[in-house]
Image 1 (cartoon, rainbow, N blue to C red):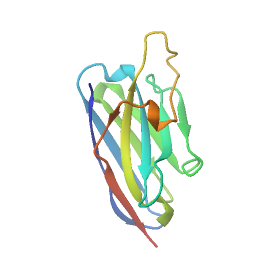
Image 2: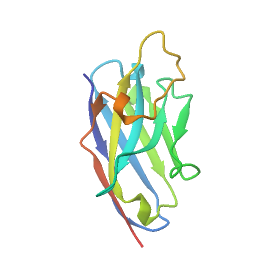
Image 3: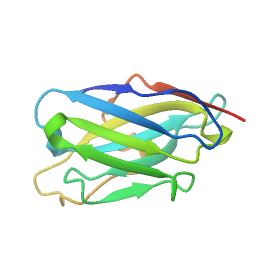
Image 4: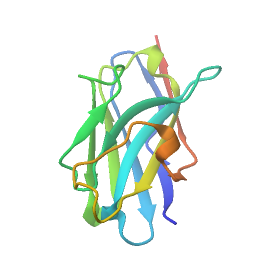
Length: 130
């Protein structure tokens, strides 16, 4: 099972940028589709973004479209989430998640449902002040 460690969270002001990183340990990182989710106090877990194992396909939740960019570096076993133009509504605990793919899955599959991910990081807190 892959182990995930997030970093890069912090406290920023409205309009600022942050880049989150998630590094995976273990082999075969390139066989995992990766996702970012977030959860604010009192709210349900929310899909932020996902990327296929090849890195060629990406998806974004409505709150992330146009502001966030997901990417991955399979050589470094790391997935990133670049967040720009942040607002207080982005305040949450951000989680990295991994889903093992099957050989017959398309290289461009990614998943947006958190229930379909089997490995999770411990989360990194992001706080945006107004």
